[in-house]
Length: 247
Image 1 (cartoon, rainbow, N blue to C red):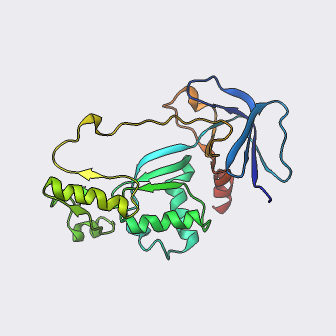
Image 2 (image 1 turned 60 degrees about the vertical axis):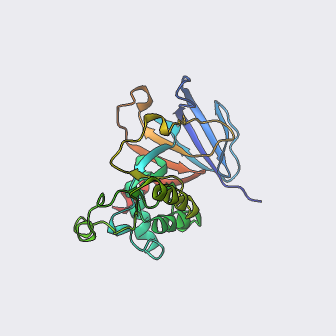
Image 3 (image 1 turned 90 degrees about the vertical axis):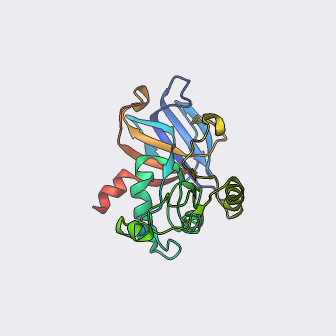
């Protein structure tokens, strides 16, 4: 079986937030997984795509845990022209180094259509998780005519007035394919209701989700840097050069 390989050569690689960076390093991603990370001479698989990363920094792909596929431009995603949809996905996600995003309070079926088309390879894009429709109090979301004026789609959220209704809605969301639950109710949610953290790492065996950026912003987390390449599962899903060529 022919494997797809990508080699990021000569960059500064931050393998973990807690470790010192590896300079002049090479990352080999094969069949969607990081095969090796090393310095100096590294075996390059035959036929691999090689990207020169000298002067650039290779980081674990970025996560955006709060995006919205709500604007009307995302409507009818199942049949939207693939090139148009790809441009929209790139403009919101991969051009900024995001390899995973979590969509909040959208039309669940519509967002899953975007998920499916990316999964089938119709267009490049990030891994998308979604809550689908939110659990809301009556009147918490603007009326449909207001949503349309704002340029948004009209979604059928789960309006609840008591805990029993909320419990039923909380079960319906994952049953419909949701990956999480968005609750928008007047009473605050306890701080310890949801806990979790994931540190981005680069190591053999992990998914080849990477961001290649200018300079070394990892030294200063608040410093914004231009994204040169975004890699998801070993494939380039955004290239600044390709974007410039299209202009």
